Image (cartoon, rainbow, N blue to C red):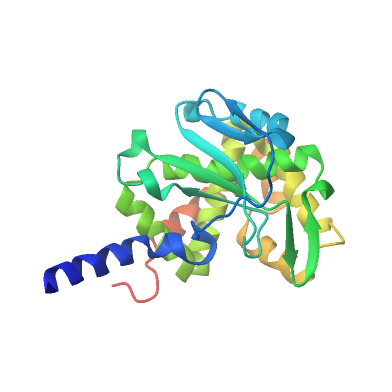
Length: 241
């Protein structure tokens, strides 16, 4: 009996990152909308089919990866989030599926922001960023993803590393102009709160950094950005020895 209790507690610890914070898997489809099956394994709401198809075209390595784009009502302080499907998390990398959760509308500090306010190129960039996360996830084991989720919840330093990695992945896939449009929209949109903008500026690549990477204006600075990511990966988190 004690062994069963310990096993159950261990399983709970494993799934905790998927039940808390931005990694919640308790998604509810509040928006009944026609969905399109693309590439046989991508499920996309019809309203964003064009933008999602363009974003996916920049990630040919994800062609055989199951991805469902789904509306979700309770994404905290975010417009989108990518995460693995818990139902097939432990079935091996090749059999793993992923969600890209999206808010049709969301609140930031009691201010409502709608998908209808987002230009097409900005939406493509947002989706491309989330696919950058999925590209990162596909290289990780199930345990690696659980550890990733736990650290993402616990450490802002780790969030910065993860978000800048997703931006970098998208830029390396040829989506730099879209990523730039997304960052510019977030930082200069008057309807978003200053605290939200500051958080995005602190954790994500800046428009200036994106331009450097896209245009190759300063190879030395681009190398410094890569070194920063490496340092974030190598630096131990608080409490680690």
